[in-house]
Image (cartoon, rainbow, N blue to C red):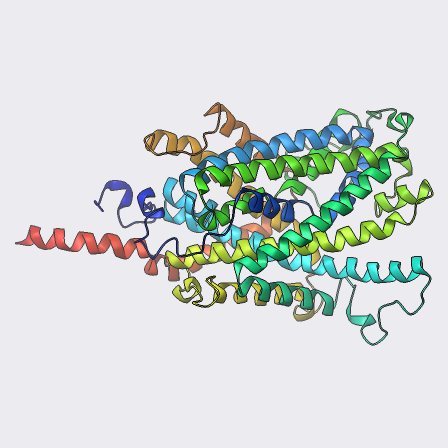
Length: 521
């Protein structure tokens, strides 16, 4: 490796792109090749389509956009597709486990790679904990509903554990068990994780299909009128967003503003396509298959969300939807309350797939950062028996379990369910750098082979950055404060550990030493 200006031993030293695909740098590409395009599509659907598909359309229709929430889903999908195109190009150029972290290392340098890696650790670790806690709520509701609908009083949550399952606060046994179970699945083999995911995703899609088909049986065009309800102000209160601070105006619901306000909330439902990139190092013919899997899974997810939205707002007038349980209330209103059980099953399976994919992705990010020396090297060790980074997987599972019970060891001061927006801000922060990385690498390395090319560069990445920025402005000020604290802590960790142990730093110093010796002679 030649010691050029961009690679000097400083905070902006960049990882040469040739090293990201070299089998010699840290033993890269030691993970087994198991994924094909269809597997990547299942991976994407596993994380993008969770329990929110049964709730978010009704919530936004009832409180923000009315039947025009259908338009909001389309706009949100297009906004996410812009970022997905950038992820597709960089994944086809650098098919490695680190995803946005590795892309940033090459395009912008080590310090920025650490920042993105640290943001991904926040996003994925919190996601597993939050979804694990939500899974417990839905699993408890499913048991209750089965007993109610079947009329079998013996089917209920046992009294001995009723106080420690299905609660938003306090110790929760169900969330502990699901997180521990899925962590073990991830730790003992990628193939087992994949087979489990296939089974659960197919079951989830069947449940969603039944919901859409059942809802369309009761569809009445009159329920879509007025399609765009008149705008009206909404009472202020609660956490303010950055956009509220900038505009200083009173927020409105419905009307044109309501469509775009709902878009911001809905776009968060599509987040997760980026996690497919973490599987690139385990994908056969990754430069071609990863972009295809990413884009196809996002388009399918958009279609499923829009299908549920159309069915929901077509069943009953938007004003009669219960924001807490919109889909179940809609089916109850049309005399089909039995569909509530299908919704419960779909939600429980959907959340389990989200946890599984998030854990797989988090394990690969930690593996990549440890392989580069920015995290302890043992976390990059591959199990000889299971051919996966088992230590990283067990760390992910243990941390997720601890975070899911965070209100216990903080004495009720912090509930993990209140930290959902922290997941979003970490994701969007990575979106910004990936979108910016496309024109940067097009300019600095036009010679690189690209299995997929973003059309309309630099306009498309600029639009992606603008759309991501808009979504970030809709996050609460408190979320930004917490994120700033997390990133400041991460910078300290990097300066104390990562900067010193960086594998790239040692490589550059090793090349520089012989040159200095020759100069002295």
